[in-house]
Length: 330
Ligand code: ADP
Image (cartoon, rainbow, N blue to C red):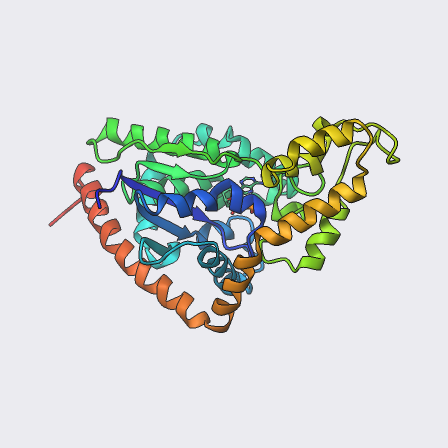
């Protein structure tokens, strides 16, 4: 089949995936694997940019995350699943690109500013974290990617990867395509507290959560503060539970909206309905997950094979890079 181009996207192995990761990026990964040559990376070095002092969980997190990918429909026969550190060419390209990347570009990165604030890093911000987007640019450019499917929070990083690619092509030779950002229909999923869903904010619902955990999390979600009793008319536009119905429950969303506004539907009933919809949506995911949980060797085999295939492509690009930079001494 004729492919439309090359795709790279990665996720940090920080554990099991949440529905923000799924609806922001993974649904697109599954769709695009039929249309593009895809490289999907476990970006373990990226996980160390903030989690450098406690690394014992990295290996287990890789396994859990990739089980989630496979259970959600990622097909290792259609795409290359790789571990970043198993393709060390990413690191060499990172080093070379770090030479041409102005520090000012990195210091004004809004994602970095948010992380430093949220994780209270200040003096502890590492050199690696500052260079996060340069490493990400290397991950993307080394496969000569044409597009990168990610959630909205990553768009400043994609913009930097584009700038870095353009700068390389301008100084040396036209080696890299400039990759486009691909967003899903739901590029920013709120967490149960209404802020962006994120593992670090502990406001997430995981794909693999047990039905009773999903019920409890949904019941604790923030709703319209002016709707206290069933008889109070609600304002769905300010309610996180309603946002979820818009995303996950398109069949019933308009009746829920009007019943809420007319004070015919209470928040608890509305939440219970949502919880059942979410539990149902991930039923087959939970079933598939059981299989991989019992056969984890398959996960590691897939990753080692995929990393080998990716490495061949990465080596070739790196040769072109060295030639373009006139540092290919033979
Ligand atoms: P986290 O922020 O939970 O640590 P990552 O940064 O590893 O997750 O993100 C993995 C992918 O999931 C990225 O493409 C990111 O843009 C996407 N993503 C993360 N959180 C959300 C969210 N709340 N809504 C939409 N997409 C998200």
